[in-house]
Length: 620
Image (cartoon, rainbow, N blue to C red; front, side, top):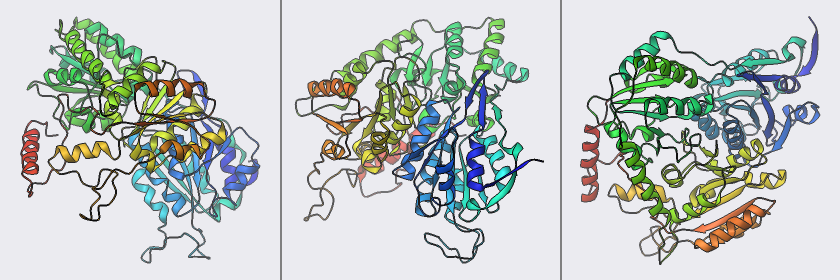
């Protein structure tokens, strides 16, 4: 057996550079780069390998470990999970900063490869700088925190362990049903130790992502349910995007005259103006889609995990005869809500089902309902887009101007706050894959950082981070990296003086506004109910080298958008919008933990409303 003597770090780079994926006959190099922030637990071991390696992997310098990992998630998501950027960190605080991003990746089924530094395998110098000690178990380190949020977790304490660890890492990362965060912890001493690795370990490996076909029995069971139903509704989830099954879904919908509701992950592959597209569905959905869901007698869920925002906490489907069928590559998701399941790739499943339903001569009984629902909702969006206020700028008005300005080749990125709700409801998607929303975890701080990853994935496109002031303050570190790399992103910052979405939820459940607005502490009440804190986000970003603009009305926003598009460096538009000018409601319900008893009559009333809502939900 031929061998080559390398350190763990050197062997890791050589291995990563030879991993490829194949999907539908197209081969992609899988690992395109490594984000890192050097600390003492990584810079000498793996860091030496990153510096000395002469292969085809680009190294990026992050600013915050969570932020750089969000950038990596954004990249992988935009690349339909067929290319990734790995992330490495030091031990302790640096490693733990990655945990939130690991949760974001796993919740969204996005491949994220993490190499956090770890303590010494030999334990001789313990306790080392930044080590957390547990007296009852010295095997535990800070990196054990990743176990709850990783789809595969391993720790390298001997150099030969790298081989089985990385083969298993690739197994999980390239599996559409099981992908998520993969964490390979690198003990400080082990990552620098040398070993005679078999040359075979470094051969070119092609990981084949196969389209899983449905079994004939599954297709028949699902078709038997649908053929007797009159008002079906398709739910287009993220699995449709990753399967590249948008055309198959449209063919299916058109053939049988079935309307479509979109999840956040499924939005952006079907044009908003298609006559069967009712837009977003669920808590942040449109009135059109939610009314259709209420009356539908069969829900055909394609590539969705049926989260509470999609199903309105299992309240959305009110027809007594409603049944749910699911097409999903992941059996865990396909089995949810007592679905009749078809465990299959979205494209393969839809094609097989279409063939059998065609034999049955099936067609829905909709006549004018879909057209009427769409017309009513389009009128409402037009109204929301045109709202002009005397005392300030409306958030929906600002969104309308931005939506009108941005062309179909651009990508909008979002994640948290009130903006995802507004975007799922009123954003009119044009083109293909230009709506990039992380809503499996709704992680604050994702927006700006992920936009850098999307820009690396789509260098010729204009990228727009749609972010609220609360999320921006929480994390926007990789905006600096975008300047460093010359990767222009446009930050569209909506400043409404607080966590507006959560303030709405709080007040909507009868609780007075408390700790959700950005106000000074009032010396008389000792509470944060003084005046709003004025923040000049444009001035702050200008210090990073970002080109900034301010907008307080329609004309200023239009001028800023034009100027920003003509810039070569990253930009930020600081938009001052009035609180409470986002969208809400539209035939949806969301279950939250309202107190059973309270001194506030409004809270007690909200609890009664919650109990009433629960009585109308599916129980499993």
